[in-house]
Image 1 (cartoon, rainbow, N blue to C red):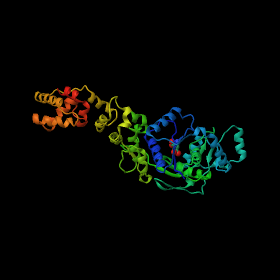
Image 2 (image 1 turned 60 degrees about the vertical axis):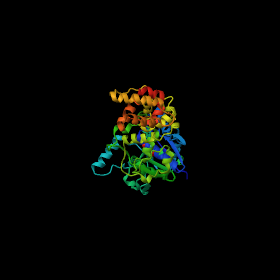
Image 3 (image 1 turned 45 degrees about the vertical axis):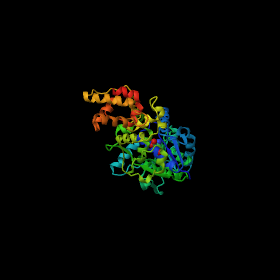
Length: 441
Ligand code: GLU
């Protein structure tokens, strides 16, 4: 069967780093198996879902290059849920309840007070049809719970956590539909996973207990249970998920100069002990993506590491990939010369200004000034077609006896206005002879 994964965000906010990692891992898992990656917008909660977030989620995935084969919206699928719902009602797997949240709270407190687990007592299951009719006549609409089969042990081999076992007797029958007819997340997700042929559900470990109940829902609907894997949650470098990291999203990262390739390279490995591969093509990462490499310990997201990966990615980006984001006039050779000095692509403009000038050199002492005048004369007469930097420094060394820093630093300062920067061998031809002579003189 074709591997099919899905990323199922609720459009109640924008994607943060943790969601992006989930999306990426689902994409990698699908691509590795030559399979399909689906985007499912979980917008059953109409009041909290926002169209602007749907648009932002699509844009973020597009920026990352994670293109879904198919997009579905839960809000367009209510008829499908209704049909499955009716089947489960007919099969006796859904039942009507009327407890208010205050009543449920009280029941929980009583149980906890007695040192018992706060499991729903199924008292609504004992209501007779006549009692339901009385409630209906008084306008009291039920909410619906899924009846867990206490005799069906729940187990799956989690792709990350290994064998998992749950005792349904220790679990509450989950509410799947509210009294107003609206859906909770649990059942529609299962119905969709079945209908969309999802073979692998990969999501955060905050969903482990949901999976336990969903395993029985798949069976109740007569469908095979997909493979499940639950990833450890993300924490900041300091050990917990900070507010900042919890909201850190694509737009902030993009504005701070992070390339999609860098974010993908880091997140593809985050949670494993494998080194980050600053790959330029996510497809290359798919081949080596391996769920069994992921540990159960929280994965640490370190912005400093992202910055390092970003620089490594930029140092490998070919000119063709960045052309339209570079300053006008900046060509292939300039990109090659400047690229190794960049932490972000925006910095290219600063180095390009160094090439195009004007630059401001520091004040030099008289002896250095004199040596630079000699350098200007040498530069004016140099064969510029070969390696003018080697020609210039070689000739100046012979003329002045300067060497090392005393030779190179004043030249760099006069030519670029900076103490450091790209390799002068690559930079000098870009500055050009006339401009170099002017800057030296
Ligand atoms: N909408 C759910 C969430 O964002 C989806 C969980 C799932 O992948 O099944 O948590």
